[in-house]
Amino acid sequence: MKQRIDGVTPPYEPEAERALHRWMPPGVTREPLMLFKVLQRHPGLASRMRDLGAGLLVHGRLSDADRELVIARVAARCGCAYEWGVHMATYAEAVGLSPEQIPLTATGTPADPAWTPRQTALLQAVDELHDTVRLTDETWTALRVHLDELEALEFLVLAGWYRTIAYVVNGLEIEREPWALAFPEG
Image 1 (cartoon, helix red, strand yellow):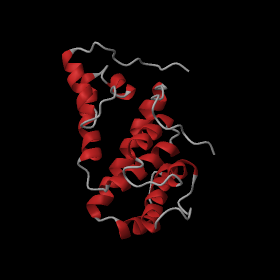
Image 2: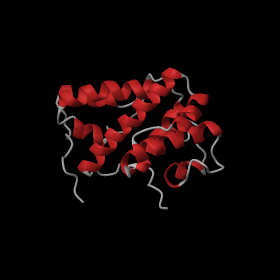
Image 3: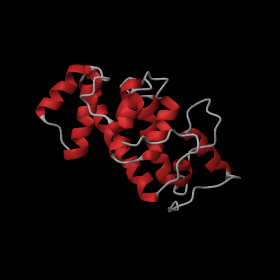
Image 4: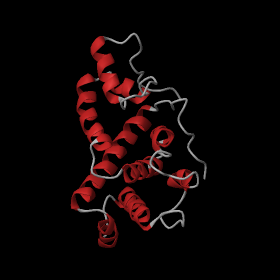
């Protein structure tokens, strides 16, 4: 499959160069992600998306470990190998996901013994939202054992945001980053 919209290419216009580097985390030296290059075709949209994405990724209330578990599970449930691979290659080890847990974010269930009760509650909530676009009272109660009100609200926005990202990536068939983790089979 061929990517449906090409990303901007170097040499970048000065404003595009600044915008692309604002997408990347501080200190990252690799080329901006293809997703960001594609979004930069529509600078106004890219700018608006960046504000929410950066806010969730860098300034959120959820712990880095919770955030990355939610992102990995949303990406996996949406079949978004691109986003799953980028996040697992970049953040999984740093946030404490074990080598056993990384593939389970895509292939496992919330009941797998590799998960803590907190992780189980997060995964169950992601799966339920994916399947029904709702949370049962039981799932909400389990989630609230681990998250305060503001974290729970942020969890819902985070899960929805990465579903949006999955729509963009999958809809455009954006090619996998060469350094990203391969999506697990199973």
